[in-house]
Image (cartoon, rainbow, N blue to C red; front, side, top):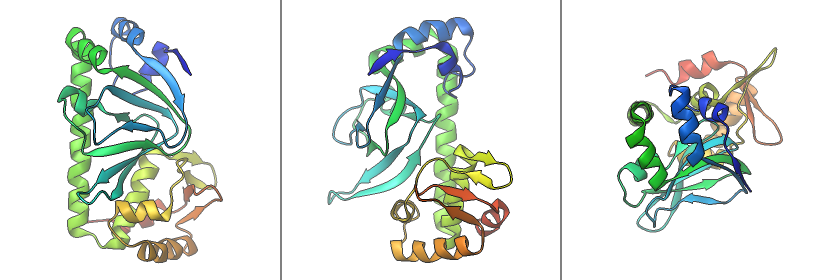
Length: 232
């Protein structure tokens, strides 16, 4: 299902949030809205990118593909995140697959329109530079975490990062992470065994640091404990 895009939807996304109204009005003519089911391949490691996607609702997983063909989840992305912009600017095959984890609503723009929008609207180019800079900063922090933290610290950092990026305050309860996440996915993202991550998650849950509902959504009750565990 494809529907027109309203400028207010673009305004809520970091890539477009600082653009003048006239620029947004023009760009919105090239942006489409669609909802796709879980398991939809948005970006393939085998093919050049053809579109940039902005997540409105739902989530996707970024899976690295090894030389042996094994797929490892390296990141989860949710509402507000951008997917596919790097391979549009520098056309080449992606190093990862990006797959929806649940029914997901997206705004998308094809490669030709995206590059044209950058040429015609310089503020979009500056916004893209900020997005890429934030992504590089996150990658550097991830490298530092892997070099300095034990598995408990890496699990704490992953949960805290999800809470800070997507968390919804629940008065009297804590911070709900609306994106469902499994222990297997956490294990892949922190480069640990599922058994080890299970032990850590059980201990933190019993300590009241967070709780997990039937839909695999975490509610963080004591973020200060997670912050202490992942302090470099």
